[in-house]
Image (cartoon, rainbow, N blue to C red; front, side):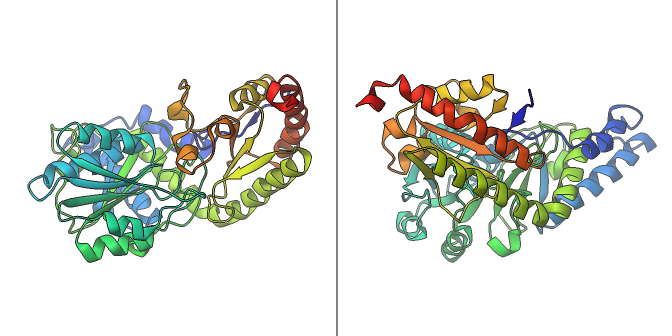
Length: 387
């Protein structure tokens, strides 16, 4: 049985060249980059070179890059760091209803600690209206945090427009760009954000390493982790050197092949969407039809449970998702799809197909061979389908 992996928004396989680049830093190049002797100095040079590569990927200055333990830490660092450093100025934060849980749960934590959070609604495509953001700003607003693209539906937000509003009002703007990095062009100067979160394992890099971009001139964030002077005194703790090296190599590879891959993945994604629509009745696309990541297809299959479909596909060697990996094990419907106004019974029938570098046309053909009869079989057992 050929295994098919279409859950790349959850994580991606480590690229062989990334692994090869990392291996020496588990063995002979083991020095601590903070050490002053030659073992440490050698590693410091390598970390600085890696910082340059990651910075180049998003059009930033290397000194604006702080390495972290991943996207969730970067989000926490940005949001809590701004909140703590600016609490005397104000305690109001603006975000959207469909953010990743790393943002939503951080905001909920702050609400329990004296901060006010406004959750902006989205339209039927999962898009935030910049005018709604502008209307929510008050004298106490210190931070706006809206993600660049959504991990469940792939919809890309009007970040430049929101950033302009934030700039005009003198408010710090953070975006979680974890899902966007390596899939669509990202340039911090172009989009105009103050803070941006990224992670390595979404673009064929290692798990456990990410970065937070902090624009020069942004009021100093209070560190999330206290200790030594690592990462320009912004994130204490000995750096994950092998992970950082792997992250930089993954950025280098993604940058080289992004345009070519984007076209290829859009073609595969659209083939899957069009064929499923033709072969299966009562299906619906979730998210914006064009303003979305090339990797992401979220569809609802009426009169069936998405989890049942996922299990049946898994038995056939096909890995997909019913939403965010961070929500696995939860019986709650997708907060993203609910916020878009989709009825709960349809939300529960959703599947997310997320493509990556390893996927081929044969993978798509395999899904098209397996999924239609699975839907037919499951629907045949559904009393709702009979009605």
